[in-house]
Length: 458
Image (cartoon, rainbow, N blue to C red; front, top):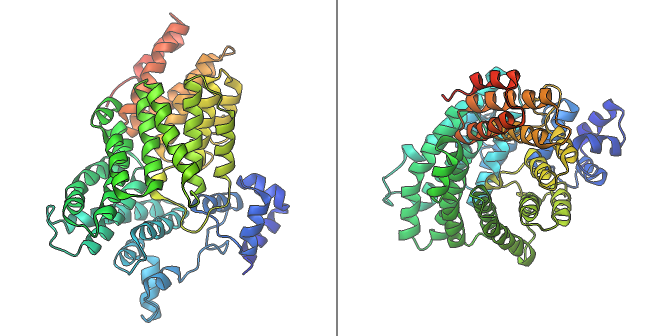
């Protein structure tokens, strides 16, 4: 059925399909399919549509008011009760957790979709409501924990842990308190889930997949809450690969291999990094089922960065990454554990150009998602990614032959302040390393010396 509200929103802007698609960052034929109701936009695409048109998802006809009620089978309830369930985010999420679902991946998809749609609401109250709901959802497995024994039905247990992991993934996009809470909760999830892997033949693979998801997030969060050295030494990334293989979920295995690739890259084991990401590429090319575009994009963009580090041409891989990112998504393709956005795509694009000494092109990639004037985010992204982009911009601007001291200082100050505000050990170390390079490039420069006062660990 044609989405008239979406068509009307474009008409209000007096844009052609091509003009609107350019603003949204998709192909014109993809936008046409969305408008005709032939295809449903992904969560990222919904967010872009809302941002470009300045309307909520509901106002664009992308969310049905009774969607949650329909999914949960509560249509027989009085209308007043249905309205309350729809209006209260915590209740909406809890209702989904305890409603019959096809499988845990579908449950995580629906939960994530509900959270993303609520996130499109702006304002202080909406942010607080979302955060409170996420924290409560993340605490759900802990409240029902049985210390690793299988006292309750495994089906219910796994649903609750899947929901908790989904909440932790969304919390990982926030500030230090959210990152720290998610890290702590994920660590507590492991004992029960590993017990199910050991003791249940029927649910072993499902539980292994959730353990792998925990380790994927523990790796990402550990870089900030602990430190890159500690997180990599604890082997979160390698454990994610091990359990993803145990689960038999090849898409999950691809993402785990990607994270392990970045761990190798951080420790400067570039050949191991290349071998690891090539394993993920092999899985993409030999899997008999279609790989979600978001997953293909993150694998190929990571491959591009690592190929450059190993002296291999990265042009084909980077092209494939961009083509995949903007390709039409199928229903259920929005994977919680993929952790890949337009901002990360531009980060990888910028890094690829940077390692090829194409500094102008690198900065142009970053400028697509970071406003070069006020350094604010132009697209939705986790705080940790925003700060990473600021730090990376600093490095690129600093290494450029046409380096501008004022520009470098502006980038660096925004990065160090973001790292301290986030209390991210990884981002703080990045900024400190860059500052040492700045001192070497401009020895004795008073404006550089003055910046040392900003290097204060929390």
